[in-house]
Length: 393
Image (tube, rainbow, N blue to C red; front, side, top):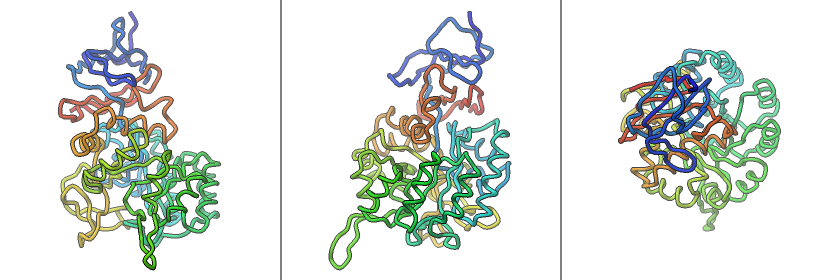
């Protein structure tokens, strides 16, 4: 009999080929080493009691949680955010910035380097996502207008050369220099993503050909059909639907996108091209009330109510406070999609976008032992990261 570090028994296991009822998973050295093999023992055994075991959730786009923002630029903020989101099933996440000056951005990236090896009790970091400052002023949303600018090669080349863990960079493709920016990023294996954009239909098609194959928080801060001198012009939203192979991420908190749009996106883009994101700010996991979007010492004051962050005058949303488990429940309960598709959007789809599908995103022998146990209400009872239980309800 082979002994392993951890074994989950009596589980309803979601695999790429379907559910295994009353199954077992054996874990050793942070990897899945056996599924449904009864000839194994373990140092620790978890009885799932017929609950569902799924791949761990992967959040492509998150700014904060638990009272912290990544741009607080402290190791404690990074690890605190990772721990908070692990409570809700997130096993991997991509720390995301907001538009800032060059020095602040550099400091955030340096803090990631320091925090990465110390992040032992929460969701793993799988690379950084830079959002802005190369965005449309008209579609900036909650991006600080003081820092909005056109792509600057003297700036982005220095950053990309120095920090090899940058995995995606969101920008508006219609800006001067944005196509050259995308070509440079793809040469560095960094994903250019369309965001905060006033691009026309044709501009998005051109951008897609130069590497902008993914869309950041689809529908939020994006152009759509407009009229100029009585003539109608399609915008970026329409181009995203037109491009079959373009992937999108959506904030499925039920507020940024109502059920009608969740259903439309699912129908037109298909389960294989959609990833769910929290886009969570620091107030995620905390009670409603006043908060700050961005760095604690220089960010915007916001108010959290009705399950979302808003500007103080309530004229616009100012960030999400969602968690990954809520996104899954909303896609099932509000959009009416199958459980397996909702899980796919929270696991293997983001894994593919981040290029980590060979070791994350599904429960298969040889892959990282990242998984979540869900009860009958789709609430998280256990989160396991790299074979380590980091949360138990």
